[in-house]
Length: 472
Image 1: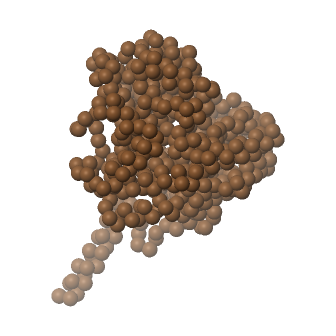
Image 2: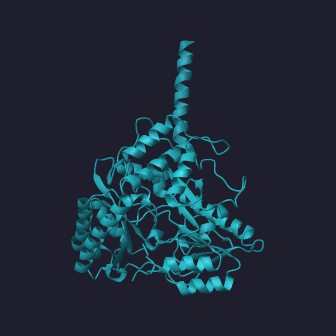
Image 3: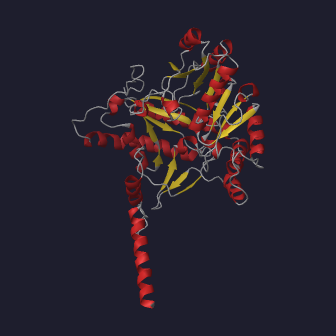
């Protein structure tokens, strides 16, 4: 009998091991430890919807990252500005831990004791009547679009199903179906049709074109959705006075001014909101990324009661939106930004970084077309013709080898958006690394690349037929 039981026990263990293997679990005793093992594992079992720089994050603190082998890097992406406060900020981690031990989720079917505090804090900080909490930035944009349409029908009296949202060429607001229906990124749109109707496009920064669209279609336009500075397009800054002109036109034609501040907000550009650079107050503000302090997804849509109360119970919601854990973290995240003066710090350090980058541009005018940015939201645009056959991605790979983590956007632009807690010494280290990449690594790369390499297809927009992200 004992022998039979042992045999059954051994059989069950073997079946369990084989079952784990069949569902992608690693065999016992073979947990991956090296960066390459982890990269291979992700490639095998995860969807291929990203093209990461080959570095594995294992630990992080402030502006620094360590991989499993213990190599240290400086973070110049900040998880697309989700860690403005720095990785694992002690005050944010404390709030996370304390709340985790008390209560994490109630759903909005009930009240909880953290969300009302967060709602009061964020509305008073930014000067709006009400907030609608969500989780991710994309959800925040979807919320704002629904809110604008509902307001358009109820308050502006737009005929049923005729509401229009105007957005900008080159915009990036996420990758949901509603958002890609207004996108100029062919990778995001091809193969996902039919796209949703009710969208018009206008050139970013073009006041005259915006006024013409408003004049021709104003009675059916519910909202104008825009980024105050276009991030994914390459940190594109509008002409001076553009935001004020947008505010005036939206007021004149009774159209909601909807600012996507998911990446530009929360001190990234040297102001709490990028719209603050022109002292403009949008009708709707969308926040996310750094609102979660780099530890949990939190997004929020801000508006006054006249707009926000157009949405009633049952018309929009989220199981996790406004949960007590997210609310506690968001309160701490906002407190860190305010108490540490990260907006002023970003403005000061941004000037210093651009000064260093412009010096590099002067040394390598053949390769660098432009340095641009506000606060610590910056980009280096390379001359694709001179860089060829090397790409901005190749530049980022070489920066990684020199301990700097950045990510390209399109083929010829590298964004430099470090945590706002970064030191001036760390900025200098990154600038020196970029200099050395252009001085030492780039000539070798250009020689090593195959002579017969076809240039990447230009990013001619399927919608408008223009090359928005040309590499020249």
